[in-house]
Amino acid sequence: MARIFSLVLGWSVVIGCQQQKVESRWCDQLPRAEYAELSKFDYSDGWFEVYEIKDSIYAIYEPYQWQEVISYLILGKEFALLFDTGNGIGNINQVVRSITSLPVRVLNSHSHYDHVGGNADFDFIYGMNTEFTTTRKAGLSHEQVAEEVSDGALCKGLPPGVIAKDHQIRPYAITEIIEDGSVIDLGSRQLEVLSVPGHTPDAIALLDRKNGLLWTGDTFYAGPVWLFAEETNWEAYKNSVNRLAELSSSLAYLLPAHNLPLVQPDKLLDLREAVQKIETGELKPVNKDDGKVEYIIKDFSILAEKPFN
Image (cartoon, rainbow, N blue to C red; front, side, top):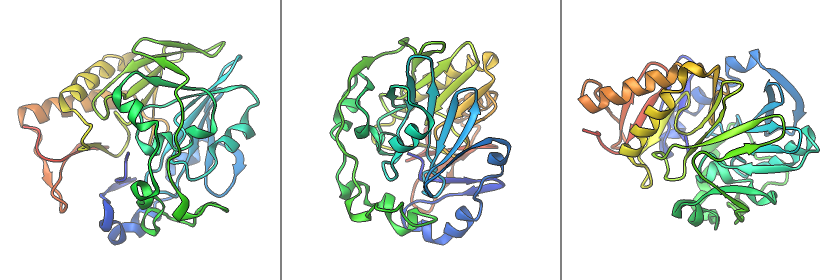
C-alpha cells in the first residue's frame, strides 16, 4: 500500500480526509516527467498505461488512482510472469492479453489489496507459505476497500462498467508455494525469489541476476514507504534492507511497485543509511497531523506509527 504520494519536486502527504486539501497538487503532477523517457505501448482503456521498459518487460501503471500502482509483465519463452495484479479496479487480464498470448502466471510482491486486486482473473498464482498470505487470499469486502474508489482517491472517473459500490477484492487460490531462493524459469529468463519481510510478513523481491534487475515491491519505492500497518515489522525490515543493499553494486535498475518503474540501485544504499541513522537517532522524525511520524530522506521517506527509537 502506498496511499501517500511523492511529488516530482517535493512531498505531499495524503491520508484519508487530507486528500481533499492537496488533491490538485497530486493530480497536477501527472504525467510524471520520467515516463516521457520510456517507450509507451499502444494500449489505452483510459485506466491503465503500459510501458515497455526493458526487453520483454512491461510496466502496467495505474496513474489516476492515489496508489499509483505498477504491476510488471515479464515475458519468457515458455510463459509470462505477472508480478502483482494491481488494485482490481480495471481489468488487468485484458491488458496482459493485449501484450502476449503466452500462458501467464502471477506472483505477488506481497498480499496487500493494491497488489492482489486482479488475482482472481488468473488461474495460476504463486504464493508464500505465510499466515498473512493465506488470510489475504480470501479477499476483502467492499467496506474494507471502499475508500480506494472514492472521489478523493481518483484523478478521473472509474473505468467504463466499473461501479464503485461493487468494488471488492475477490477471493483467489494459490496454485504453487514458493520460498526464499525459489527460481522461476520462464524459459530464457530466470527470476529468483528473495524473502524480504518487514512491510508485510510475505514481502518478496524478485531478482534477475543476469540482467541486473531487482523488483522491490513495497520494500522500496520513490515515495513515502509505509511501515505503520499492523503487519509491519521494523526489525525484519532492517534486515531486509541490508540484504537488498548488498546487491546494489550488481544491479542496473530497481523496479518498484509504485510511482516510478525505473530507479537507480544506489537508492538502496541511501535506504540502508537512513535505517542506520534512524536506529542511532541521527535522523529525526517529523510529526504528522494524523499522529504518525515521517523520516524524510532526499528522494523518499519512511512513515511510522511512532518513532522507532
